[in-house]
Image (tube, rainbow, N blue to C red; front, side):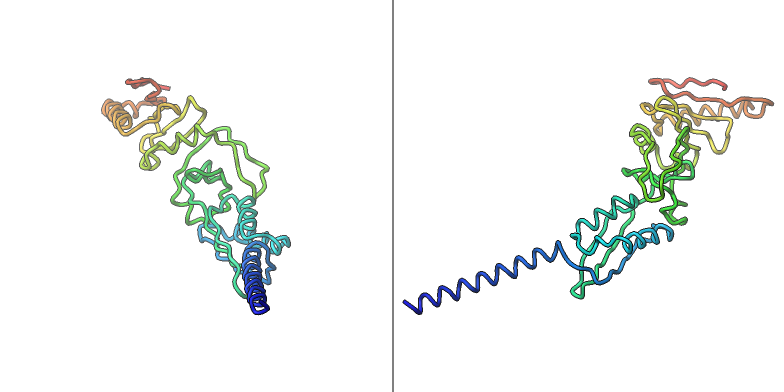
Amino acid sequence: MKRGFRGTRFVGIVLIGLLFVSLVAHISSYLFFVEGYSCQIDKTISQDCSREIVGFINSNKTFRNLSLDSIALSLKNNFPIISEIEVFKSASGILKLKIQAKKPTFLINHEYVLSKNGPLIDMRFFSEDILLGCRKVEIRNLNLKGTSFTQTKGGISDSCKNMINKLRVDVFDSYEVIWENTTKGWLIDKSQNKFAILFNDLHVPDIVILSACQDLKKRLESKGEFCRRHVGRWIADVRFKDQIVLFKD
């Protein structure tokens, strides 16, 4: 009977030990002390913003006692350019961060960047090289002055975002894109600025409409309409169903 009791006690001690090791491993993934860190930052992010991120990490003493998920969330909340963060702690106690940026799609008013499904972000967050590939959009009456460098920008309606995402990529090569409000948007022809297409958020020009507008422009050119003195701008209004209204501004 004594041997049976000792055997049972030994098994119990082993189980308790295994449970303790498992619990420590679980806790260590949430609470740990950071002895230092290394940070790999996406080249899409500008040097100024990279310095802001590093400065934020250096000044944030609470990172020493936060979970890995909490650290990633804190960085995302303070830097809206960040899309993904890989955070892990090495065996030596070094916190390693790999930071990926949102992919910029549109350059708004030569000041802000809009990713496809993201917020409006100060262009200073992004490197100059990456901005060269952005599609340019002018949004009238956009006032975002006084917002700090590390804050998410607002000010663009969902309707406007949907509109510019519907436009074909090649439209931005041929036209200046201007949005005034939900009922009035402009495509100013880059090769002939005396011709423009007027549309709204519900009637965004597709390839059929764009082709028809180009035919109208060619007819006007053949008649010498764009060469006349003091000629106004010709407008192709496509805000109506199954018709284009052509008039001079």
